[in-house]
Image: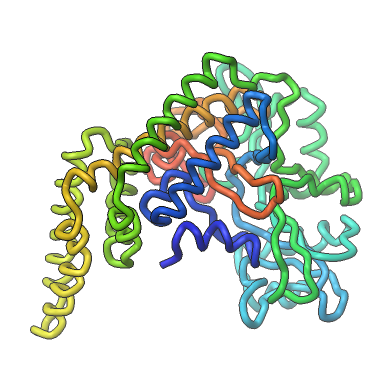
Amino acid sequence: MKTFKTHLEEAATGKNLHMTHAEDAVIDGGVIGTRNVINYFRAIRDMLSGNARAPVNISVKWDGAPAIFAGIDPSDGKFFIAKKGVFNKNPKIYKTNSEIDNDLSGELNAKFKVALAEFSKLGIKKGVIQGDFLFTQEDISTDTIDGESYITFHPNTIVYAIPENSSLAKRIKRSKIGVVWHTLYGGESFETMSATFGKAITPGLKEVSSVWSVDATFEDKSGNATFTKEETAALTSILSQAGSLFRTIPKNALNDLADPELNMRVNTYINSLVRQGQRITNVKTFVKGLIVFVNDYYDKQADKRSTPKGKKKQDDLRNQALTYFKKNNAREIEKVFTLYNHLVDAKLMIVRKLEKVGGLKTFLKTRNGYEITGQEGFVAIDHLGQNSLKLVDRLQFSNANFSDQYIKGWQK
């Protein structure tokens, strides 16, 4: 199980294969991770209020899928595309259609062949870029939403919509593939490559009519994402409460949550609440529910075992997970999840402000039509472009992602 600190350091030493939700620092990162996120939020507040000493870059989290890599193989200088297997011990990359045929089938096979043909025209000379598929021509539709005609693409959960008669729609309809780029890699081998986030990638690529490339970088040309004096004060108040509470929590109450068995169960329990559209409200009720959830989980696991040895192993794992509640005072545990809530509140203030900057219209598709939604979320990146945190309204987007109520792009 990776800790939050590991995730923050991972980008500086290697690859952008995981980002953690900011508030999960309390669960995954112990004292160090929690302190890092409080400081991160302070830096974002300062940047959005115009007082940043070391600006934090913000990227938009597009809801593209699947992930794709394109670049030059440092071992032979040849162009390739790849899935996340590019960073395996034995890199899985595609330089020809036959290599794609040997590994991929169906719609994924077709998409990667288009990507191989079209991305090779972008003039990548060195390094690797990472992005997410948005569409190929087969994915472009024309839909009427609230009486207006749009072209749409629906790569995953969110439907992206552009007025049909706009110049952007015409540009997209001329292209063969759409992609959002978000990470740049450099290094002498796949094993030693390191990631840089938050930088515009498309300016270094050739303009090709068959490829619609967009950067994930966040631009606020309207000034709508600047905090007012009152908003800055409100966020400062939340972060002050978080910081004050953090200083009263014993180290073990945070660090012990990194125990693999307990950590997995806590994250699973919180995700189960997200699926139900709930967040932590009453912390006492939450902690009691968590203990019941842990016990029920291991009861079910023990019932699946047919031997006394197998059942005993599950009891031992249960005891390992529940040790946290025996070692730490109930009041201190409640403080931990109150702090978690403070960080959620701070994050949502930031997300709501960033959402005020206009862009493509975004919807969720239901059986009965469309619902307006925000972007998937945002990514906060430090001024060195090496560490990143996910800023997502989980009750909005994550719940929609889990819910059967909404039609996903791959369900069409």
